[in-house]
Image (cartoon, rainbow, N blue to C red):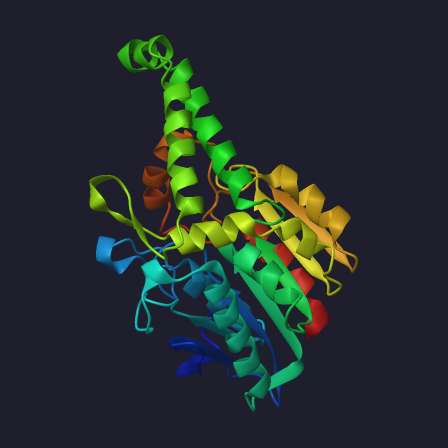
Length: 317
């Protein structure tokens, strides 16, 4: 792909100073439509990399450059406490993230190169939930939900645990025998319930988990209290929702909820053999997802994803 854009480092003034990258097409004239990219859960930076673990995925950089090549301005930024941004990630709640995203939209609306009447928000994974919350609190002209539309966090956690249990129960050999014989599913669920009760009854931003590892209790409480389905019903801007059939972290079946809930124009797409990292991948064991992500990290974005996003965005050119 020929490079037809330039990158500028920017500061977004919110509750804390967020460091971001504005990618601007060098082929356009006048003001351009803009796409804000909201990342998924965890400490990945604006490019989608977890540098402290040396995991270089470049997911959001790839998305940004691809969209910029179509003549859009894109903005991606380091979340609170990640990359070069201020703040403490572990103390950040869901609504802090929504407020930061709203400040980023307002930054774009005030930028001299941006057409303030053509701003689209693209959320991936947790970013799809944040984008949904944002879309009913700030006027935008389009919303793209990748790998996460229409599913509550509690549903996602329960589904992922159940998939793990099913694989463990079906395993041959000693591990499978031990899991079945000692009813480890029931014990695990009891332990999870006890932990979640502790999180929900706490009023602290951070509590200690096993081995005294800090846990973002405020973030979890706010996610569990948020009903993404109710906000979907309030959205009237055009929506594109895409999830892959090989995605175990998001549920492609929940795309039906998006289609039924959004009052405006909506398109939902399930892409065959696309995983949570938006790469082409056959179905793999949920217990080996991290290894699969690392193995595929240098692969390009799924070509069907690129096609659907490009075709949908043409309405804004």
